[in-house]
Image (cartoon, rainbow, N blue to C red):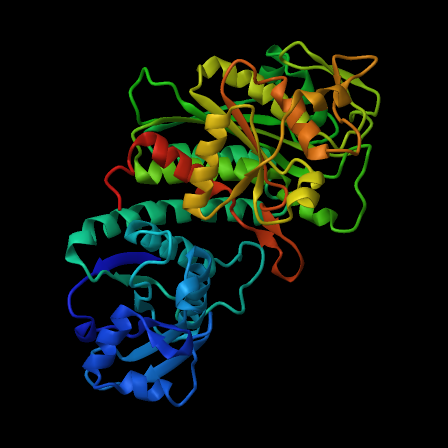
Length: 502
């Protein structure tokens, strides 16, 4: 979808559809009042008939309004004025885009938020429109015919800016928003692909394709022989049960000073997880194709960074494998040696994500990173603890925790900090190895993070457990693309590119 900004007199804007906001009790936004005046009060007169009260997500299409150049006017309910925040703004935009997709009009002009929602400036509001619109029009079609696809899809969206002085900020928001939306879209598409298509080799090919598109992006893929030379015994132990060879995908984006330390993003890339010998229940096992959403989000964040051309150095690392039962697969009680030299007793082969991550995290030391953030659909325990709204954040670094939490709030892709006290480490004790790969039923998400912490003591590190937010189940089943928006915000802020925004 194409996006652009315009300013001037809204009533004179020629467009197939003009989208305006209305608050509850038929209260008009600032821009809607201007259009109402240009139409001789026709909007107010129509609203008095009671067809739209302004409740959140309500819509009403109007035709032939006098004094306006627009062919149609779509009114969208924004809820209570005092409660018009980021969440309600997002819902109003999604409702409007849903209607526009059903129209036989390929473009529209959007003038909903005036002033912007509580807690957001113009830059943030415009960027949110782009991300929300792109997510709403996304449709998976790679392995099925999309019979419900709109005959005339929405291709162009103009965002109205009432203050000319803020055009530069709005245009920057469009550039950033389009890049982040592209990253989210890539992560969603990779996550939605079935495991027989999206294999570790397929993920590596997608990374190579990104490298061909962007001059600043260099791709390196380590094969199993390379990993064996590095003594990545934990990672390779997981892939032994699969016919698909494991890959360690490394993506270098060099946009900053050559001597500047990079941010490193590490994403779990389990393209299918049957649990291995500790096999999962059959119900909903198909959703284990989403176990690579951490890796997909790293690719998405790298794409967004490349599209924005940020002045920063960024490294993406994706350990990719399958976890299947086989005669060569890990067995409960097996002991493997990680790249760090620490030995691990495998008490549950379904706790494999931490096994591939620990070797990848050890590998990250060679980059002399400014910080490392890993993300993984790691534990069902995190879903039990936090539900499906925030990602779980674990780090021993208070300042880094605050930075990531702020980025999540700013991007509308929230995280919630969980404890990482040393008290939990004793649950990983083993009689036969340096540690066990699980710590028992209690505090499962925390002990998983404690396991990873043992491999990250040489640099600043944070872990995001995204098991609750990476995909939706049920009727709306599909990848969400989270936490690409959070990661992109973190990189944006670190790069200094936001100093001129807003």
